[in-house]
Image (tube, rainbow, N blue to C red; front, top):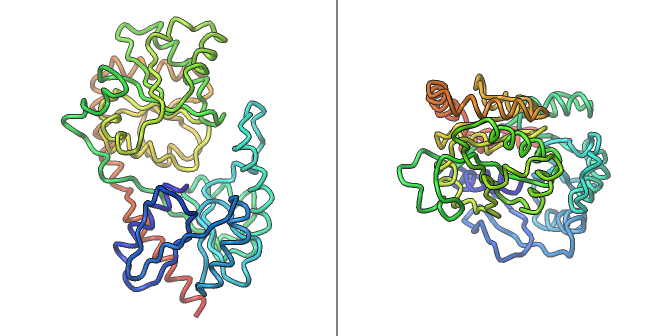
Amino acid sequence: MDYVVLQEIKELQRMDKNNEYFIYVKPGEDRCLESSSNVHVVEVSCPSYPLWEQLALPRAARRDRVDFLHCTSNTAPIWCGGIPLVLTLHDIIFLEPRDRHNTSVYQNLGRLYRRMVVPRILDKCRRVITVSDFELDNILGKLKLPRHKMAMIYNGYNEWFRPMENAAGVYRKYIDEPGYFLFFGNTDPKKNTERTLIGYARYVIKSETKHKLLVADFNPKAIDSILKNNGLEAAREYIVSAGYIPNSDLPAVYNGAFALLYTSLRESFGIPVLEAMASGTLLIASGTSSIPEITGDYSALVNPENPDDIAAMMARLESDKELQERLIAQGLERVKLFSWKKTACELLALYEEMFEELG
């Protein structure tokens, strides 16, 4: 969510010289934005995020006399002193049944905070923005918001995700040879890590080529445990644990990959889908939630709950050169529909509409 709003702000800062913006941030070493003539980056200190959002943020907004406050990460102050609110509600996963396997304290506390705050702020929001038609329908169905209050604005991707001629100098920091499957591991159950690893292990058993699997940001011991629990330890020699891959290295890592595995159980959007397609990288993705909406008619979609379906698609792409070429070309064309500039233009149009309503 922070990544999305950062891209939006950068585009707005480039294109809009008329309106004045106050960007409220917590102090920190990682300074991603700089102030300009009409964009003011304001540091607001507070010991915890709930206190920052519920106390310090509305106090700062009232001090600066903003016309309205856009909260961009699923929650907002419950009391804002009469300042009109715009809320970006990326998803309502926190209102859906909890996966009993999720033991992350951070994720569970975040879920409880959202469950407490969101129902109390919806009536106070002039607009609620979400990021896909899938999530829009989900929100309308479950929260019963008036349709006129809702807006849907797609996310974008950065232009440096594109086909590259020489990516080896970067991806070899993580894996020796190109032609690997790439998977962003995660402890969040919705990322479907266990089924994906089982699917890959079953692919290895059947494949003669045996493309390696590069797993980013996932504990190697957790990989060992999953494979052992499923009797698939033989696949371990083909799995490379990369640790955290910084965003600056991702374009080359995509380019070195044979395909990205994006086999989540549920996504409200899925920016890596765009990044892979823009890089000319094959994509094996879930045929669920918002993903088919983003990929269009892209045919390498699988049932994420079926490891055999994942394995079968990996093997099919490996052996079908004609399908590979068609999907790469299709992805490069499809991704032209999305950009952060388009996202920011639609957001600015919503702001202008708000200004007219407020008089």
